[in-house]
Image 1 (cartoon, rainbow, N blue to C red):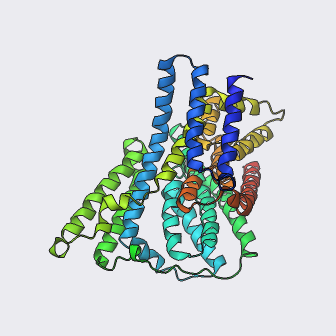
Image 2: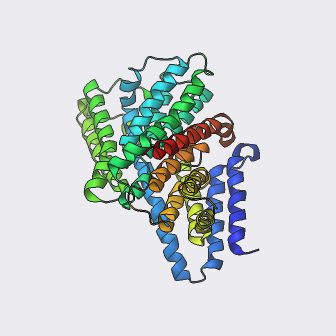
Image 3: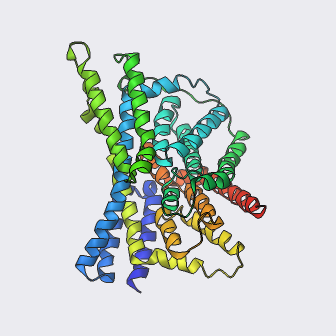
Length: 429
């Protein structure tokens, strides 16, 4: 058995352990961290040079760190807005409790927000909103699952809505106007089909959670609530603008926005009557609300995937796909759809990176457009198949098997429907 084959076997075993977290009573974060360590240890047998391996490790860690710092910055901004009652301003306007109607409202809101922000940030914001709207855990899990589908669908048709579309856009493979025009309808269908199916099966109403003491902010004036909420949302919206203007990584814009909000909140509480402070409004206290377990899970699983990327296993997978004996365009339709399904198992970033390295199609070629759709929405099929899914899984502690039973089939149905729409749409161009 070769070391590359052993790494694939180890990854599969680790993946199964993560999926079976609850039955085997082993925390998925611990499994992910151990998995990444074992795979990178195996890499010492593939790259014997310590200097070269260290370079690959540092490069991989840098790529993952960008996502982690982005996630931590977004989570902190959301928590600051939440603790100051900002989301109450929004949820108070949503009076609907009927499950079907509320699901459509949440999904449409998520779909369009994801295109403007990105699917990861939008998912974090929407989960914070759902906690204010739905009390029952499993009802909230179901809505959270649909948030993942809607966020990934919304991110797929926007050049700034998903990491993979950003990669294709910055890499000169797609143009902003064309990707919006040619993938909006398939992306919309990928969420409309699951919503239509659920409209016939969901019954009843959701129950609102009681307002607990930790979420009360009656001692904060309405003016300060609005100002903090507006500044927090502006900080999130500023990230794609920052990237477009400076061409610097998005996490820097996110951390910069957090810094501005942090200073503003400090000044707000300094100006309060008598300079009194409530401990719960201290940023250091708010930081303790961030789920570090989710951050470490992200670190482990992404570093494990990067080990397979550096080890060449992902490149081998991409190359094997190109041997499919079909004529164009059918061949590349199949390849792209397979990449989309694989993106639910392996992070879509290295898969898209591999595709960019393999093919040299011109800008706005249908392959790049279809790849943006497939890699973006295909990750919804499994909960750990996208950054949005991993973030929601960590925040709501959603069980992998529960999602697989309840949501995966809906995601697959929507994914295939969207693929069909794109193929038909492209054939008429």
